[in-house]
Length: 142
Image (cartoon, rainbow, N blue to C red; front, top):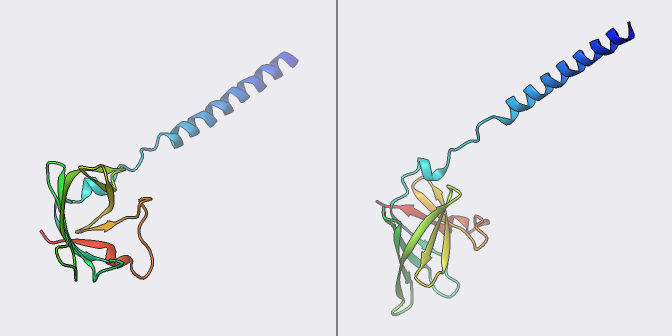
């Protein structure tokens, strides 16, 4: 009788362990959300805006994102003479959300992909916050 009780308890234990493992596999097998800004947004085009400037009236900015993973960044420092600059380089998308431009010298700028706009990020790839946050947005014009 003792052998039968031990066998019966063993069968119950194996059954319970099997049920627990099945629940874990079901929970762990959920597919990750593969929805990213890169996949959804048409981010190629021309973006414009006037960025804040510490020692001028602002930086009139035009960023062109091309289909061939190149970009052109035109900057004009308002209120300054001969203060127009043009940078060219390559870009890539990081984590499906951040557009990274890299000029010929290796300098990188980070932008958050948004619908019809790009938000300039800080050097730590974080959104700029506070009262001036809206001034760091480039709007898609074409």
